[in-house]
Image (cartoon, rainbow, N blue to C red; front, side, top):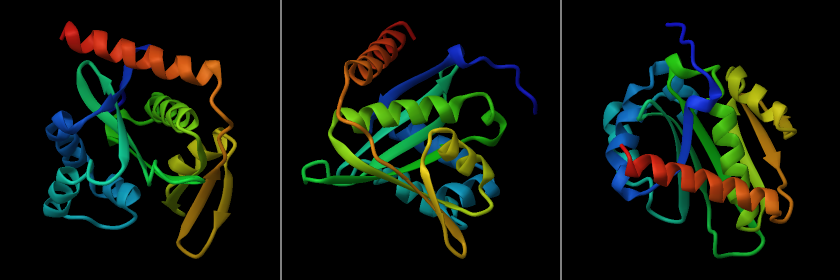
Amino acid sequence: MRLNRHPQEILVSRLYAANQDKIRDHFLRLDILSRRARFCGAISDYRILEYAKNIFRGDSMVCGASVDGQLRGIVELRGDFHSWPTTKEAAFSVEPDWQNIGIGDALFERMFAMAQNRGVRTIQMMCLKENSRMRHLATKHHTLLRSNHDAVDAVLHPYWPTLESVMKEVVGETRGYAHRLFE
């Protein structure tokens, strides 16, 4: 399916426990290859239901990318936000028919701004070697890539918060809130 979508149609906003049904449905719409890419291996519907149910346990932040009101991509930033120095893990998923239209970039930028604004010093991402889309996204955003037998590790080191990073998050959240008001 070839979609004719534009990046301005992508709405990225922070997700909360009230969005768990949308998150679950997004993960269930991933095909076998997308599930393997996201979870670094095969995963059943049952495990996806468990994962989605527990996504907000612990100290994690989740952002979603919606197009026409439907959640099409997710980024999770996981780790302990109460320790110093902070290291977080980021994980992305974009539904197959919605890839290559800028959703990954939009999620990456929001995740990076959120991490930067919270003093995160290191962001780690891991993907399978065959996940060329994730490797491309990481390279595009100047990450350091390290390869081992089956996986590629990507490491980012955000700077301290800037006016630009704070404004990206504030404007994005305001836009998401306004959109939810008028849905």
